[in-house]
Amino acid sequence: MMRTRDTHRVTCKCALFSPDCSQVLVVDYGKEGYGLPGGHIDAGESPDEAMARELFEELGLKDQKLQHADFMMHQNGKVILGYVGTLDPTVELTPQVEEMQQAIWVDVDDVKNGKVSVPSYSDLVCKNRPN
Image 1 (cartoon, rainbow, N blue to C red):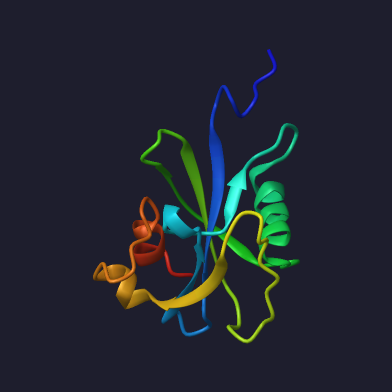
Image 2 (cartoon, helix red, strand yellow; image 1 turned 135 degrees about the horizontal axis):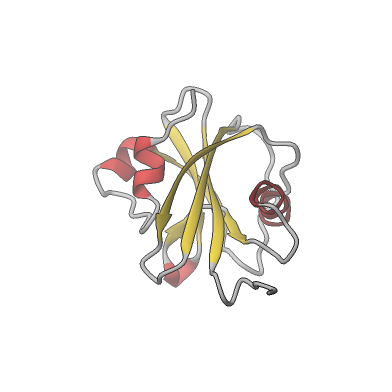
């Protein structure tokens, strides 16, 4: 039986932290608010392959060293596989303007205290900093 993402909606999202873990990279989706880079797993892809593809498509990042962090349910019912990693904030990003307005660095403390709302992903950011 062939399963598609329409049958089992699974997505990968990644919290990329500054090397000192004080900041996290979030994506500004405009009126949809802030989120994390990532997206759906395509047919035939592993979650790791999907996460690498999404980071390249959305931000122009290649060969990111990531850790599996957690999984959770999104408010719309899809399953989210969470990843974490580090990234130097001076690395030049090439945000995919068709999907987002910009990618910005925010303080993790601002996510913790609700100053920056990252719906469905706050726990991934606040509880899963990389080792």
